[in-house]
Image 1 (cartoon, protein in one colour):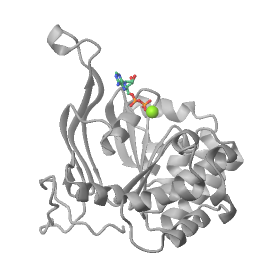
Image 2 (tube, rainbow, N blue to C red):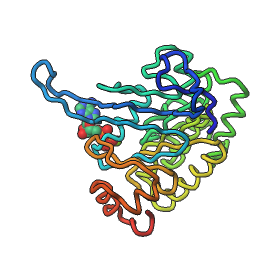
Image 3 (spheres, helix red, strand yellow):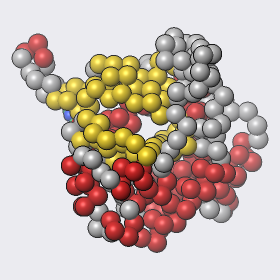
Image 4 (cartoon, protein in one colour):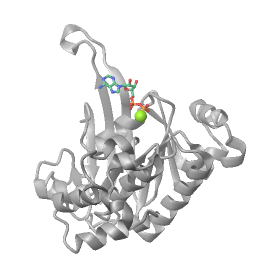
Length: 283
Ligand code: ADP
Ligand code: MG
């Protein structure tokens, strides 16, 4: 694990504190987190829709797959990590910082440690920017030191794209190239954790396998962990040691991927495995 930040679940929003007793790094911690939505305000008698319920989770030094059918709460969980939503109940701690982080230096620190590859890369790339500008933006926003041009070229090469693409704009890229640019954009700040939302969702089998190989090699080369949101249990097995199954906002199963997939204990997990078209050969 490349993170060097000390961690403590009781850390203040501004100052991470070393956990001197255990010296372990509880890097991503959810304490009894729930997210409720109201279509009618609660003070008018509206009932809460529970998108996430009582999530207790420690993600330490392993890669984690978050799986579940549509509406299970996967995206909500990811949005919490990036501060795009706030928990209705509970507390989230990232790398020793309690969310929400208000201090801009601490925000930049955490932002460098955890980066997102969104589900639809084409729409997440600024259409007016060249690939070079897209890759340069996080480096200047987060005040990263070093030779930005060299960092950009290394990231592009690590995702298997030629430097000639630097001059192109997103509408000149194929879907596969746009996805790799989105991965490179996440890589330039050297995150400790890469979060990928359904990266294999729209890929044909050949490109899916290429992407799995690429992400596996990036994890090793860059000493990076993965949080993978996916319906693709084969991808979960290929990339993540741990798996978490969400169903109706509840964490119904969590454990080593091989164990959960070979002996699924919860009906939601069993249903997911049975619904995979190639479950016998890929899972
Ligand atoms: P998943 O990513 O697993 O498909 P989501 O996290 O997107 O699921 O959504 C979980 C549930 O919360 C879904 O039923 C969804 O309709 C609901 N939901 C998500 N965002 C909102 C919102 N802003 N208002 C009301 N309901 C929402
Ligand atoms: Mg989703």
